[in-house]
Image (tube, rainbow, N blue to C red; front, side, top):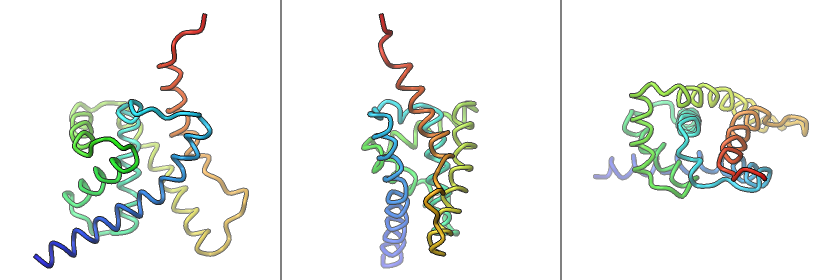
Length: 159
């Protein structure tokens, strides 16, 4: 019982660190784009992007995560970030991965570049060498671009 409680506390801590790292980026995107609706979080690209990004950030905090531990962190972090059901995340990701959805896997691929940019930024911050000019173009070129595209597609046509 004690071992389980310690493991759960460690997983929850890791999830909170992931959420803390991503929340400011998502909030900046919301301000830039004026809105990030709940439905965009279920887009195959966005599900792949968030699943891979959460995975990369979680593994940077804890290298030895089992698949079950990682699934728990992914679902909880995604739910905290999107305010949608954690169960929905797991089901959708599984279906998209099994269907070999190209948008889902493109999101996964793009998230790897963002994760590398976040890792570089973290190292620079630890070295107190973060230059004001160092920004996250990778985030804007992936997350923001997809959000803007989805918002434009959902907008009613202009007369």
